[in-house]
Image (tube, rainbow over all chains, first blue to last red):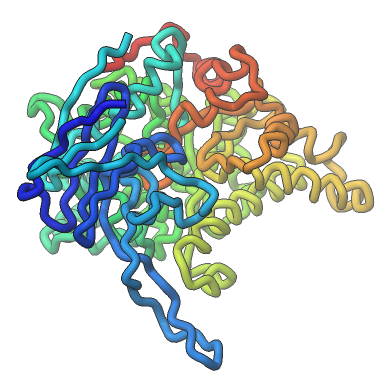
Length: 120
Length: 402
């Protein structure tokens, strides 16, 4: 395992990301809610660049207490979406939201002073 | 051997390259040695609406041509053409639909040719059968004469501007099926044009395929050795499908529904007995519908042979001799289920891989190549050999994987 430089902390605002090629690993490094997350950039569906798509909040059905449907809205949970086919992954866990058994490989991120590294 | 490398890149959402977008597909192509064998895509698309001004100029009828040309001034896809509600880009999640406008291509080649060859090479595809996109709904146009005029203009434009200029692009041309005489004339006029490997009926429509009015067209196709295909799509205004409230629902059902109806009519009315050498292909319905329908029709057939006296065998036996495109191929968690489906349709000789690229639910060649129950020969048949035999293509690979 080695540490691969990603960016200066000041270069990554919330919602920013970098795609890091670290040897044979291709990794998406996100900054979200002040935390860094890093996942394999290989979609578990057909191998698309899972970390390179849209960042978008989870869509939820609004169901009233009487169990009637009241429309849809976005929740606070943030997803990243594979741009090839739309597989959605939870940014805090790397879990595929359509089937939680599927998880992208997760990588550790470390900060040394101003420098952000991913461990692969 | 891959050398360890280090690279950090930012994402840009104001530039696009199909080669970059499909970089992982290219990696798969190299890992699986696609350069060593033929890959034919029997169903991909371009966006003919981006060339409407050119296409409309090929319409013979002067009144419809003028109406069509004028309609392009008002922007959008054209007010003359019908369309369907359908958020296929998943609310912007399928980014290539929006970003493809940034692709930079040479100005001396038609943009559709350049754009298509870029993704073909990136995936490892040698030949692709190109179909239109908005015109998939043209069979629902309220004016039959517009379907006829548009089919004539589009087919001539496609033959002259695209197929004549690029041998790796082929097509099964649009049949204006709501006018049987015009369908016949279309086969007569275009059947021998370069790159025309058959004719295609867009499935969402309300004309029964067994109508006597089509018999002479089927006979002509059989005589010419050109296949007829039925390309699936949906109609959200269909009385049954109108009950669905999400695109996932109308897509899942609609892309099977019309082909199930047409296939049932085709078989039950004994068309395979009447046109035994006519090759028939069913496109973009996935595979599970065929697995279901074969069993369903066989079950009823044994009790109701008097309903379909032209048949000399079970319905599934006729269906097993037809051709099927793969996409959108359902891949269940249990591979034995998919294996059974392949067995049911005689996949080794009858199944042809298709991408449907650049549409939202495209498939890569690896959807076939990575199936553990297929032999190397079966994989190569499905990925290209079966289509090469059906279309009469040279089996030598011609692609240039980047």
